[in-house]
Length: 259
Image (cartoon, rainbow, N blue to C red; front, side, top):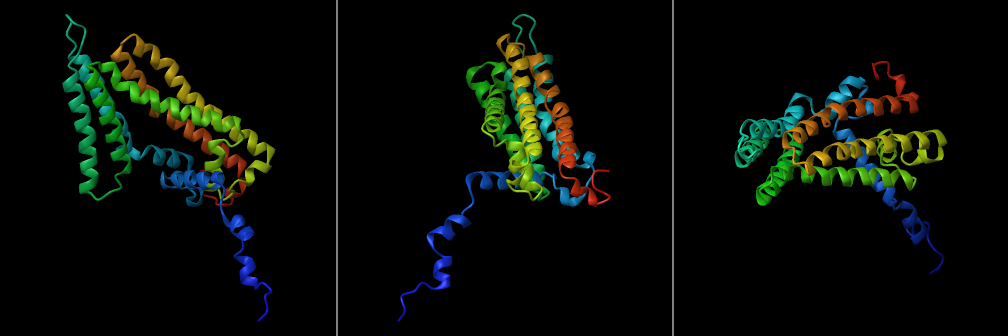
């Protein structure tokens, strides 16, 4: 019997297995691209920029789920402020806020609709409420949000400066480009700055809100958190989408794309 290697043996050798193994950046980029597609950011659907932004926000339900719990907390706490102490009813504010987030989740469960966003919102509201209740300080309801902004902003900033901007990874796999965009200087530069701008959004939230937290101005802090949420997120999604369209003009072959 011949000892010469068979073709299928060679194909299954260590080198071929190494080639088949995706890199960490490819795995991460594919995950980001998949998440963006599930959020409605799929260029293959040929949707308009306005539709893409609306889907990214989750429509009316997504807006209510994102805004209402925080809005109720701010309004309730402000309305119940005792002039003598300067403090509002923290327990009532937290109960109403968490309760509304829970209702949104239950409604989705009953309607058998995707509950990931609602559950994520409920967990975020619940963790913030638990932290505030445990410390007895209403302003601590916003601390988990600060941590989230630090983590996201840092990840975006670091990824940009190490040459693997997160926006580029997400867009590359969303547009079927993989990591090939890194060989294009123009795309590399644009994705770098887009990632920096997104990092700037999280940094701006911290720069504006942390001083209000230190001053224990719960009403102003809660109000600005809402103002710096979806009202800033939506335009940035639109700008990012428009830039991506400019970078990938082949998508414009679909006459309905980006109208």
